[in-house]
Length: 156
Image (cartoon, rainbow, N blue to C red; front, side, top):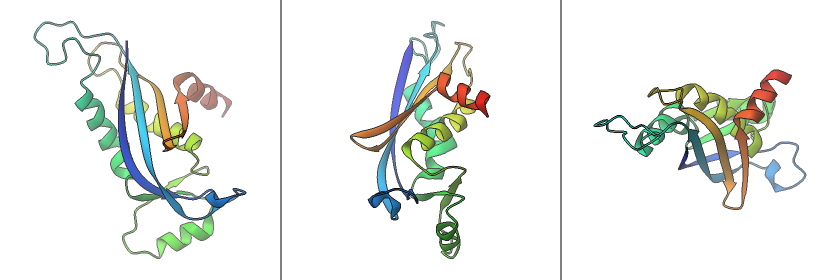
């Protein structure tokens, strides 16, 4: 069985080598979808009976491990030195650095890697993260699936 929880957050970014407006500092109302698979819990009397995982717990894990860090932050590529140096001049500015440009694709992979550890089989029901979908806009998104992330890891 698969379940999905959607969360939203606001963040800024830029894609420095983009041929259009995305090379400028700007922000988005991102949406994050977390898709988990697992067996439906059948244990009589458990709070999660009939569920793969309680949706409120799916949210709490994502908030604690990822969304709180990314919300109202500037998501920057370490190699974008001018922007990184500029952000360091802003006292108390919330910046999250990545090893690749903060495209929807890279953010989806980064989110998958962070959350994969957080959702490990909590209930003995084979719970595992299957997909992260990052919406940069309501009409544009990227998916990172377990197979793709594992293949990327194997390729180095």
